[in-house]
Length: 467
Image 1 (cartoon, rainbow, N blue to C red):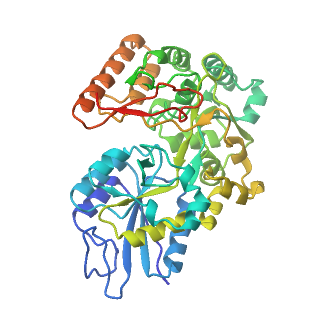
Image 2 (image 1 turned 90 degrees about the vertical axis):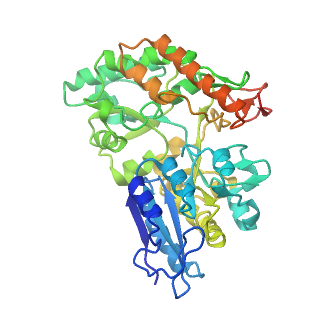
Image 3 (image 1 turned 120 degrees about the vertical axis):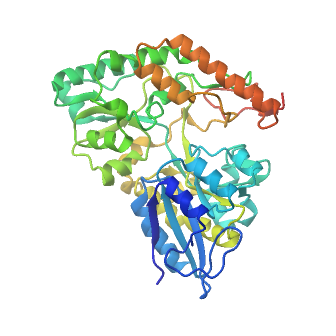
């Protein structure tokens, strides 16, 4: 029986292990290493390593890794490493040293720019190696997104599940107790949070933000997108952040009114989740992964629900971004055949069905949607794909000076003395300067979609310009 090999380590430790040429086989004696660093012991065992930055599905993946190691029939032993920070930079540094793992978990929000990784020779295509069964289960031909999952005809990863767009997650019992309704606008959400906080008198609060864990992304960014506000102007092929002004002004009310959970600006996401699960928070925001979190990791002690994000004026004028996930990239130095074997396992009907029925995601293909026992998904039904949800084209991934746009916008919300207009002008200039520079260098191309529709962002005609 093969052992289960699952590790949770910091990215810097993982990098140290990789650069130190440690055996991927843990205690197994290493007798030979190929170019990827994958070791095979004297008994013919094939060692492969997978890195991921996903933690919400840890328990299920631990069991599935064990199952793969015991049943793959080819003496493959997969070591599954959960990274805790600096995922992308750790991968790039390890790859530059020839010590990349065999597999890299991939989601649309992993921070990995596919074209950059391909151009750097870090990853290789997998489309031609996938079985017909895999292609049917995961509807491969309809899950191709240029610049995100594929480049031209080459497929580099296939999403097997979807993480919904963000929702407003609220304590229904607390809402009923205080007598408030789900807000339709960002301003109304401030008013609701104020009423809850005032009613709590220090025992419960209106809202919590994980200030140390991507706070803007959790729902305010979704509120902006649904209001038709997005970082990139696809029609003109440039960045424009000026329209975020109203969202920032409205959301500042959470801080000017002092109605957030104490210490919100320094909380990490799990700390915020724990407070919500304890019943002392009216609402917070996140996507469909919260079903698993609030069921297994931090079981909620009350009735909670998920509602559509509020918008600036109560109307939906743009799509809510949903996230493709569940896929894997294969590195150039990998034991390719063993890596594909693992990808086939993690994209199998049995694995994906179990993943979906535990509330970790939503079906990516019609095939899998028809196989899921809907009676088992519980609250996940409240995150089902809506007409206003879509996958946005990947806009040019630039490296501006200073903070990225999400950090900058959050700082403008939480630091109420900052000048919003000046901050947004500077942000727009920094991003466009980086865009112009990197297009001129040939590092990236400018994406233009003249027939862009904010409610159906992936349906337009893509042009990639070199100027």
